[in-house]
Amino acid sequence: MGRLCGAGVAVLLVVALAAALLAPGLGRAPFDDPGEGQHAEIAREMLGGSWLTLRLNGVRYFDKPPLLYWLTAISFSLFGLTEGAARLAPLLGALLAVGATAVLGVRLLGPTGGALAGLALLSCALFAAFARYVRPESLFVAAIAWGFTGLLVHMRGIVHLRGPRNGPRTPPIAGSRSEPGTDPVPADTRSGAAWAVLGCAALGVAALAKDPLGLIGPLVAIAIAAGLAGRLRPVRAWLPPLGLALLLVIGFGWYAVAAVTEPAFLWYTVVDNHLLNVARMRQFPDEDVPLSAIEFLTAAGFGAFPWILAAAVAVGALVRGRAWRDPAELPWVALAVWAVGVLALFTVSPFKLPHYGLPAYPALALLAARAWRDAAPRPRGLIAVHVVLFTLAGAGCAWAAAGDGRAFTEAVFGVSDVYSRKEAAWGQASPYPAWSSLQPLVTWAAVVLLAGAAVLAAATARRSARVGAWTVAAVMLLLAPVVAIGLAVTSSARAVTVMAAEIRARLAPGDLLVLEGPIENAGAVEFYSGYRPVLLDAARSVLGIGSTFVDAAGTFWSAPRFAEAWASARPPYLLTTREPGRSIVASLPPESARLLFAHNGRWLYGRAPAAAPAAR
Image (cartoon, rainbow, N blue to C red; front, side, top):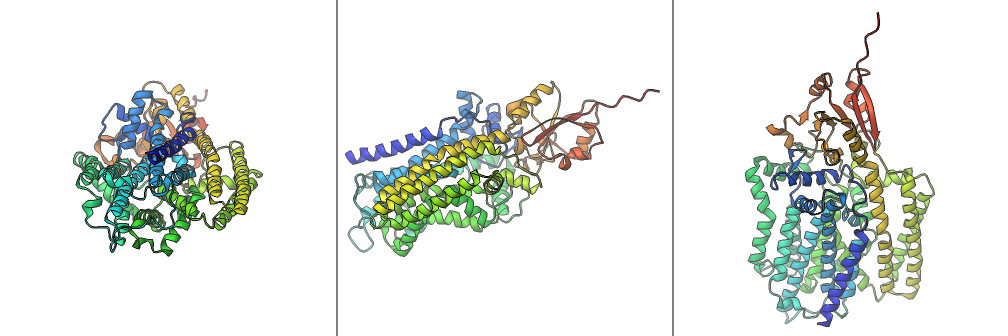
């Protein structure tokens, strides 16, 4: 009982620390546009419409499943239409993901190792960013993490009950040392299929959060590990009928209903948004610019810095020891297969974005915690590598902080930011935060990293893996506020809030607003202004397939239709994210367009008054 209490306390402390780091100032920054705005607007429109067929700007939206929008709409109804309410669902996902990682870590490594694994995930910069960002990623990661936790805890119990293939019982995990909270004959052997049912239900939620691949992929990874260990059959032993039923109902129930009610949905989701997307042959593409293989690995690696290094060490040790032959190592082999598989799949895929590596992060955090545990007898090498990494990263941040920030900003945003890449494809600059708001953050990062390197150097001399591991965790946790503040200033530099206030002040009832380009580039314009725009040259977007429906004909305008309306007695206002030379404004009659307001990379135009006739 004492050991269970210790394990529970470790998990609760890690989740509480995650909440303390991630929750403050959750609603302080406006919605990032593009990025958050469209997702908040979908949830807002759900409040007055269908909770089955999602809509954005009144148009059918098939790009993502509904879990994020359901949770956000509920949050809006409880707490009001605020940024903080919208970000509660991603925060919940992040806390659940950290909790799942800590729980599985406690089961495999004991309370100390479990706490380190949870903190490792929490301190991954990319994970911390999406924990405060209105997108489904953190919910997706949480569902996958709980899926692995439930199924692997259950399978670990099966291994202990059945023993090795040719012996009475499987020995303890290789390299492990007994630690309070690590039960050599775990209590999960007595819990029946409850853990497996939980894991299956969680994987069903993953499909509802973002993508059915989040349901299928973990099952494949676990099946591979089980097959290599001779524990694949009987399948019902680790995938019980009740769990399988929940997995199918939760994971595919909404998809089935949506396919019946919206005949185009299934083709778009399965064929266009997956198969044709991978082949770069989509019929309804958006403006996202995929990363190269090197760019993706850079984004995924820096997003999980420095834990990905220790995780690689653990994977290498598993390979050298041929761990797949030992049933006791089955959970670790499954985690390694998943982490390596996710990163390898998207590295070779023709289409990938910076956040596509996120589902591997809980597995990377667990593998990193194991690497630090196993390094205890000879920790100098692992610690020394981190000393070098922190020194180089700290020196790089110090060098960047001493400059004008141009190279740093373009390098970081050019790889990690989807909008900056889209703007570059258009040949125009993305609106970046002022360097004066980023420079103190980069300076703080330099100080923390260099101080951490110094402490790690002392740990090298002491040969203490424990000091090394917790120093790395402390350094990365001290950098978590940098991520939150950096995200907030970036959102403020791209938000549509100020422009929306200008629209509210200028437009009268009955006036028409036209938005040039994809709706996602100003997704929160209706949320903040109360005016729903007509969309011009906007079919290349997440609403591409929605534009083909008859009821959307009035929403999507062509250039001739806009020109006709512009020449009418009551012309529309034009909002665009395109620079004047690249906008439809350049094709309008000279002197007919008057720039009314410009802010955060957006321009608002009205028709200039007609010149008075010359006096005779």
